[in-house]
Structures are given as C-alpha cells and as structure tokens.
Length: 164
Length: 360
Image (tube, chains in turn yellow, orange):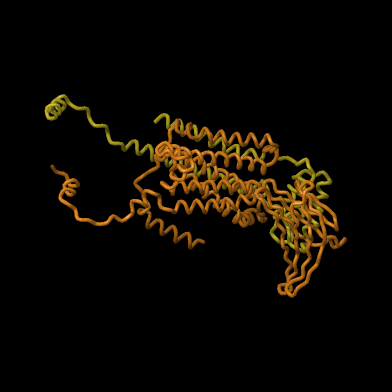
C-alpha cells in the first residue's frame, strides 16, 4: 500500500516536472534569430496578410494579392533597420492593428488565450487524480472486516468432525 | 448552441442513474487511469480549438480590439498536448489493469525510456539543437517519444511471442502471428499505436520545412536544401477550357538529375479563375513541391516557389497502418472463433448424464 502511494507520488512529481519542462523550454533561448533569412522566415510566419485572404504573410498564395508584396517589403525594411522582433511586431500592429498578428500577443487579456487550455488540462488532471484517490480510500474503508479468530471450543469441534 | 447544450444537459440529468457503474478506478498508475488521462488530453485538445475559435470574439468584447488566433497559437498549444498523447500511447499498454507496482513499472519501462533518451542523444549528436527554436525542440521530443512508444509496444509483442515460442517451438515470427491471432483486439490495437507513431513522425518533419522563391529565367538555377532546380524552358498553352503557362525544371541532387518537374498556372475561361497545378516529387524522405507563382510584372520573368517538406509520406503510411491495425482488431480472436463453432446435437446417454450431474 505504502509502495503504491510512493509510486503514485513519484509519477505525479515527474509528470509535473515533464509538463513544466515542455511548457517552459520553448521560451528559453527564444530571442532574436541571428541568420537573416531564418529571421525573415520566422517573423513573416507570425504576421497575417492584410488582404483578407486569412493566410500567414509568407504563405499567402492569393494570386494577384495587393498587400503581401508591400508587407514583405515593410518587414525587410524593419529588419534592415535592426529592429528587435518585438519592435518589428509593434510597427505592424501600429499600422494594421492587433489583428495583423497571427497569434495573440502575450499581454493583458490575451495572456488568457495562452494559459487557459493548459489550466483546463491541469485542473481536469488534478480533479481526476483526486477522484481516483477518493474512490480508492472509500474502497479500502469498505473492505469486509477480517473474520474473528477461532475460539478453542470451535477449533476442537472442527478437529473432531474432520477426523477420519 | 445554448439549445443543444440545454437538451444534452437535460438528457444527462434524467438518465444519469444509467451511467452509474459499480466499479471504480483503483489506482492512479493503471491502464484504466491512462485511458482516463488520454480522454482528458483529447478533451483539452477540443477545448483548445473551441477557445481559439471563440477568443477573437471574446477579446473584442473585453478589450474592444479583435485579435487573430492562427497557426502559431495552435502550434504552441496543440503540439504539447499531442506529445502528451503520444507519450500515453506508449505507457498505456505497459501499465497493468487495476494497479501497477513500482517493480513492474521499472521492469517494463526501463527499455523504452533508454530508447527514448538514446534517440534524443543521437539526434542532438547529429546536429539537432532543441534549445535553438521550439520547432526543433518539439521535433526532437516527437522522435524520442516515438522511439519510446515503438520500444514499449514491440516489447509487448516479443514478451508474448517468447512465451508461445517456448510452448510451441515455433520461430519468433510465427509465434508473433499466433499471438496476434489469439488476441486480435489487443494486438490489432498495438498496430494502431504504431500507426499513430508514424503519423507523429511525419508531422514532426514539418519542423524542417524549407521554402525558396525566386525569379527563374531561361537556364537559371535555384537551390533548396540539397536540391538544385534548373529551368529548361517556359511554355504557354491554350485550349477551349483554359490557358496555361508552365515551366520545365530539371531537379538535381549533387550532379545527378533525379526528376523533371512541370509546375503550371492555368486560367479557366468559364470561371475566370486562376489556379496553380503543383509539381510534386515525392519519396519516403521528403516531398519536393514546386509552384509556378506567376510572372514578375516588371521583368516578365517567371517566379518559381519551391517547398521541401520532409517525412510527409510517413503520415500516409501511418494512416495505412492504422487501417490495417483496425482490420486486425475486428477479426475474431482464434479461441473465440473456435468456441462459436456449432456442435452437432446427439442423444445424451445415461453415462454422460451421470458424469455431468454427479453421482456414483
């Protein structure tokens, strides 16, 4: 019983560590890219095309698109001016509005967009784990009581009746 | 939506007594619990899609400005959930029903964990740097967890096959086939797990997608990854349905020509729409996808867009394996098939009757 409890605690701890690592690691080292074309690719995939096609700027294959060439040019100009990633995004947001970003910026109310799915998963997992723990405790409490020890009279009677 | 929710809630409240079960989950570390957490993850994935769909409206209501929730959001939120699912695909079959002891976990998990960590080590040694960007991190995790799952499931096959091999003296392959035939639902399900791993490997390849777009004049060349595309000619064509422009490109890997591709752009007269006909060269390693993206209005030179998408075909192979696993699971198990064979009726003699009922 104690071993199982320890095993469950051990697994729970590692599950939390693993989840934390998975969530945190992508943000580590996520600064400005060094390579120019890689950076252009990375930034361009965070911005939407403003022509209304609903596609990412660098994925826009809308034939005769009136906006994407100009926007790519603006992105190149911002990169050539040595703006940081955040500054580049701010330039686009100022000109086109927050809707130009392909995902909500991690700020203010938009933080909820990123956190809530993981929060739902965490709360659901904790609820399920608590429910299992409660059921297990209840089933242990409901186990039938062990039979009472045999009295000497009963033991003698059993011996008599079973003697060949 | 409110009406649908109200009807579902009302039906649930009326019928919830029928949903009660006698049995309860006995342990957090058990196969039943892994099913439960599997369903929780799928629920979280559904919630992510719902949340991403509704968030622009909520944000406009809360802050007065609309935001876009696009691919970067789903990549960042959905991929970790998918990786957890893949992980459970591997540990679920190795956990025992009702409760798994620490000793059993150590015995069953040691090889899969070693396989997963070794895969991560090999990938990093061959140049993948998961700390550089999240796409590479997720790809390394997908490959490593995939190795863990394949090892766990293969060990389940081999463990059972070894027992049959000992009992019957057959070779390991024949023993595996016999094992599968004796419990098609279980081992067909394991084939489905293999298929899921293959799909994840195919998706993980998208972390290494490359794109290149360039004006290509006559005999000009462009490179993408290890491939060089050399333009041979540009041609126009006209027929009653559409007018088309296409490029003829030779594809070289090193100095060896491996393919000739003809990406095309068509203008359909009836619909007055322009469509691109993609040229695709596909193998197990990658898809080389070439698009005729029109002409530069200033120079008149054609623009060619090339995409290199690694491991895409593994997604389709994974789907085929899943279908195969499903068919295996649907076939009745060998013992069950034998049991259901009809036994011809015969008269029961007095001796037979006595043997069944009991007596002198």
